[in-house]
Image 1 (cartoon, one colour):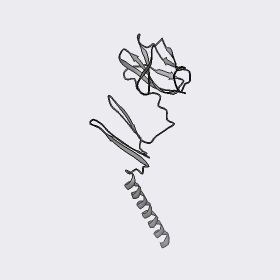
Image 2 (cartoon, helix red, strand yellow):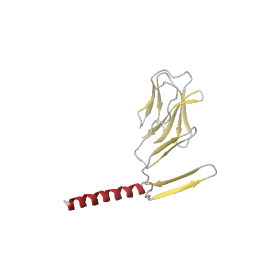
Image 3 (cartoon, one colour):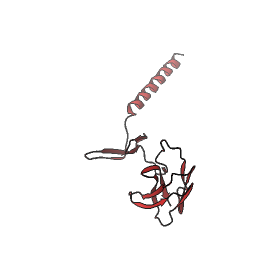
Image 4 (cartoon, one colour):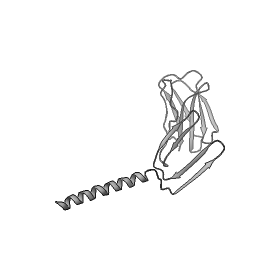
Length: 163
C-alpha cells in the first residue's frame, strides 16, 4: 500500500513538472528561418514555424500572422458594413469566367475593377442587374483582386484564382 502511494505521489510530481516545463516554453518558437525588416514608418518580422494565428484589422491595413498555409485560398476580403447586399463571385478558382451575383439590384452605376497582384488595373466593367459575367479567358494563370464599386466606395472585394 505504501508503494502505491509513493508511485502516485511521484506520478503527480512528474505531471506537475511536465506541465510547468510546457508553460515555461509556451512563449518560445523553435524556428527554422526568419527575418526582420524596418523602415522609417513600419517594422515587420517573421519566423518560419510559428503556431499562433491572429488577424489584425485597421482602417488602412489587414495583417494576418501565423504559420504558412500554402493550400489556404482567401477568396473574400472585405465585409459589407451597413449595407444589406449579399454579393458572391463564382466559380473560384476559374479557367474561363467568374459570375458576380447579388441578392438584389446593385446601385445604378456600380462597376467592377479587376487588378493583378501587383495592383495593376486589368479590366473595368459595368455591373449589369443581378448577375454579371467577367471573362478570364485571355488572362494568364495567377491570382487577381475583383473589386465591386459604387461611386468611390468598395462594396466587396474578392480574390480570384485563375487556373
